[in-house]
Image 1 (cartoon, rainbow, N blue to C red):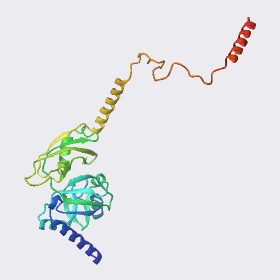
Image 2 (image 1 turned 30 degrees about the vertical axis):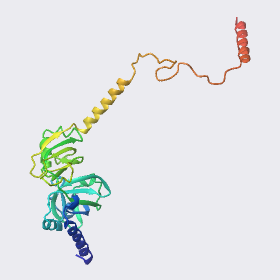
Image 3 (image 1 turned 90 degrees about the vertical axis):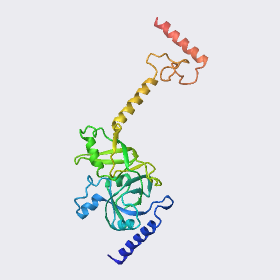
Image 4 (image 1 turned 180 degrees about the vertical axis):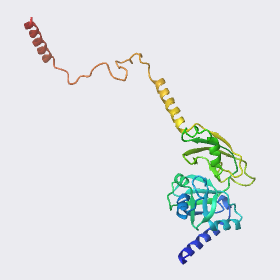
Length: 289
């Protein structure tokens, strides 16, 4: 390690230690930092880690190796974390560690989670400890009805959640059978009561899946719901439309709002010109006889 990189690593550790010294005071996380992100898939290819795959890692992340001993010495939990894009704060994801082996100042995320957080390779991600309840139930909505056509889709989702550390309401999770990949919205989560005096940092939007007997429920897939919404809108339009044999509205207007009278294309013709034209037409008619 060069003197410069060693200084950078020590600087990161100093910041972490300072943040952990007042763990959890004033409603703030026990530890928080901004870490440079890479996808687990890209690191696995670079380092030749065959045990890191998009299918088996679930939604867990890889954190700096030094962080484990730091949190343990501060007696801070190692299992629950929260992620946020500091440039896009509209979504916060809750997760847990896959391993503590990343270099100081770095973390590795599943690529589909990076996409939800709108993070690219090398972007900074806000990472912090968190506390949220053990899971009791969750409701899901597949993006495609193809997922429900799988005979064992319930078992497939269960197997996927075995590799998840947590679920976040309002997010979408990635489910794969190794051949096809499906995205499923997490519509609702419900957790068990928190211990007395312990706050829920997620405010009811996250649950811990460790040792949880989770009750699963499904809402109609997004594509089916879109068809139902379109049919309902078409039915409402048909009910609002007037019947085909309805009488024309008063005032000379026809169906569609058009008048039955034609508008004049120019100014009215003077009387003397009209009289001359009528006399000329009468002479032509007489001559024809």
